[in-house]
Image (tube, rainbow, N blue to C red; front, side, top):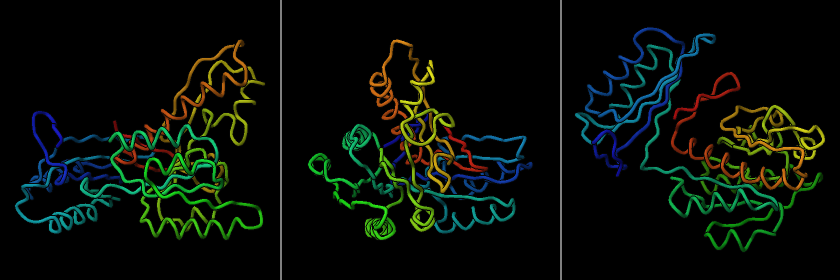
Length: 294
């Protein structure tokens, strides 16, 4: 059950509508009137306008438990408003939790943190599958319950293994892939064919120190801040839309090992926040960046 402004809502009847379009008058009123006219109860709404891009974005969370019509009729009415205003819309239902597949190599801190939060009920999703290119974390993953599959990747078998990964994701109906320190570069073919968003955690405050060994490069540069960045993966390495970032102050007294230790704490927090935002349908992407509603 959810409680919003004194209203108790059944999660089985909660939906979230995400909207993006060219900014113009009447958008907010048209959506609100459509939902109200069909008996939906708006629980919360947030919006953002980008005056440079002349774009409008909105997230509306509502309860459809007392509709005057039915869900299909409401969806059709939203589609008609979307056509009239040239909107891109996405309607998500809380009763159908997203299915998340985790990809990992040998580092376990992000993986274990996500699995713990999932088991504790902090992440509203299902995690049916963990894929790795190494067998090291099999016992850890199996203790939490998901299926663990090992697909070693070499230069020679990369295309074949990526196709196997895609088939596994389809078998498990994955809605999201999270790279929880998966130390392989996914090909453009994989990202094109995977059929769902792919989220990555980069152990640096992008766009600084892209690529490998960012903590070593940060140490050599003598930085006073280190960070972590969660972003959607694209064919341009470490340049996808940024979802979440955080930083921590460091000093000349910190060794590379200190930076790595502090950085891993940041990586866990940043990735968990980004995954939660995605699962709660708080993110809209445009022009290689994001609007993340709080």
